[in-house]
Structure formats: C-alpha cells, structure tokens
Length: 482
Image (cartoon, rainbow, N blue to C red; front, side, top):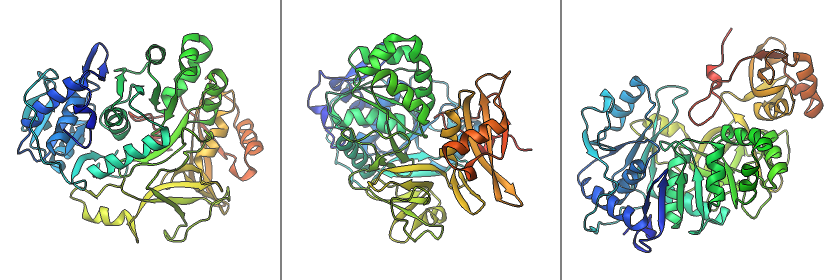
C-alpha cells in the first residue's frame, strides 16, 4: 500500500496506535486512512489540526498516502501566528475530528472530518517521488514570523531508517510518549517512526509519571520525552518505586528537543540503572546525530552522526573546519545529507542564506566534538554563545554546572554587553528554596571550581520560573530585560 508504511498491508491484526482507551490495528488504520486519502484527491496541501489524538495520526497518514503535503497546526497557536501560517502555506483543506470548532483563520478552508472508523476499498495510487514534499512544518519564529520548512518524503524515510540502525528499532518495540503532535519529535519520530517499523505507539494524551510507569510496566519498550519530562521523572523517582521498576525494564529512554541536564541524567541512571540517550535534530534537518543503542550513553552529548548524515564544525567564517578533540574549540554545526529540508516556503532568500557552499546547512547551533566523534552542543549561536574576555563560552556547560548545586532548581545562562570583557556571563536562577536562594558569589565559585574561572557568572538574577515553549525549551529572548 505504501513504501512509507509497508506494515499497513502486512499484518492487519497487529496493534498500531493507542490513545487512552481508543486504538487501531494496522488493518483498521489502513482502512480509515485509505478512505480519507480518497477524499483528498485534488488537494494542494492539507492543514491538520494536530491535537494529541487518533484523528491527527490518521489524518497525517492519509495525507501521506494521498501524496498531499501535510501542514500540522499547533492548536495553541495565537490568532496572528495562525493567520500567517494559513496565508503562507495556502492549504486547500483542513483535517480535524468531526465537530471540531476551528479558529477563524481556518474558517475559509474546506473542512474534512477525520473518521477513525472509516472504511473503503483500497485504492492503488502512484507512489510520489522521494523528493516530493511530505510536510510543511513551521519553525518557532523566534527571529520573525515562523518559516515553513518543506520536508521531502526522502527526509522522513532516511531519518526513520537511520534511527532504526542507531537504536536497533524493530517492529517488536512499543513506544510510549506524551509529546505534542504538531512538530518533528512527537509526530514524525513518535508516530510515524513506530508505524514505519511495524511496531506500536501508546500516546499518553498528557504526560504523567504514572502514565509512563503504567505503559512501560505493561509492555512498552521505549520512552520518548523532552528534558522537562525527564526532570519530572528524576524528581519523582525517590517516592515512586513503580516508576523506578518500570524505567529499569525499558529497552530505550530517549530525550530530545533540548539538552538534558547532566544532573538529571545521573539521577535517573543511579536510580534505575538505565541511561537516557540523547539525539540532535531540527525542523529543517530532522535527525542529525544520536547516541547509539550499542554505544556509550555519555551524559551531555548527542552522540555521533547518523548513517548518511555528514556533520562538521566551522569557525566564524562559516568555512574553516574545526578538528575534533579540543574541548575549548567551539564551532557552528553544519550538516549535509538526505535528511535536509528542500526550502523555506515562499522564502527563497532565507533558503539561500541557510546553506553554505557545498550544500551544508547552517544550523546556528554551537558545539565541540570529542576525538571519537561524539558531539557536545553548547547552545545556539544567537543566544547561547558568549564571547567573554577573548574566550568562546557555551551557555550549556555553565547551566549544567549550576544545576549541580543543591540550591538551584532551574538555570539559564546568557551574555550581556560589558565594557571590559566584551560580554559578561549572566545566570538566571530559579532557586530550590525561594526563601533562601544561593548567593551569587557561592554560585560563581561553584562554577569556577567545576569548569574554569573565566566561565563563572558575573551576574546572578533570580526568577520564580523560566519561560518555556510547548516543547520545554527555555525561551531566552523572553527573559526580563532591565
């Protein structure tokens, strides 16, 4: 039926999707998605109202079967952002659960209700070329209006097959997660990944440590999460023995979308004997690197390049490569491979500016590389690279050091102008005890002892909470300004 999802035609009674008490086998999914795909004939693009539900999964699979690019819509999008996405991507239809009340920005589109129990005769369709667009996924828009990254079918298949190799992912695996379904992590990896392997996915609807424990104890083998989820897990382990037992029996624990603090790595490993592995990807590139299932889960790293993906670090000139092995040699990550997007929709200038000579994509992420190829990301070039006293300093390693202090619950590090140093290091701290926050000089000494004196924060500011987006990433541009 589909080269993307061969399991749809191979084992109809095999479990495929479960959301709460609602589920579909592969045969039921093939029938429902096939019937919906027939209704998409002639559509240009399909907006998908991406709630964490069976409807979203069926809608996306149907669009892929029909060869119609899917535009996942975050249901929490604000009115102006949603209007921009609809104008920019110009979908001809919107897919959602029957009876869904959609925002005004989607009101002029042809509404097609997703019947997860739908059925109809299988229709043989010509398989689209691997270069044909599969998705238009919008970036977070931190530096302007969100840009629509056009992801070809090749990027989806190459990433999922590279992860099969890296994670020894098979049809016997059952994945549990509670991630949103409007982005790469939750949708492409978390829903399409299991379906491409012929395995199953159990979506929690809403993340909870109780749900994780229940599903892992009930046969799930893999867990996907973001750092905020793993932090909640680490905090809960001392009082939830069932969670400890369930995590101890998992085959693979994977964290992504932001760096997992080393402190949480170590707490989970100490309690369960299982180490969380990290991978690194972006909307524009899907997955680039990962710790391998048969490799060392080295805390603070995102592993090695995936099969078929080339990774290099470059100097500020964007061309000169930085050799591996120097822990102070910070450079921008550039990647090249079949996993890349083809363009920013309607943004030829932005597309051209995103690539260096030779087809290398400029990620904007800064990293160092160990001699054995492991990549350690130190932060975003725009917000996390601090040039202080002649040194290039990554915010990530300072944040990890701060989180090791018992008085620190959350930490973010930025730079601000300094007449002497160029930039001074600023630590934003959510204290474990708001009544007795750790003193600035204590935190500075704590960092200097673990890293180096020039990496100590010169300014400490205290907050009740750090601003985060839906994926748990700290939004440093939203930190208060003086």
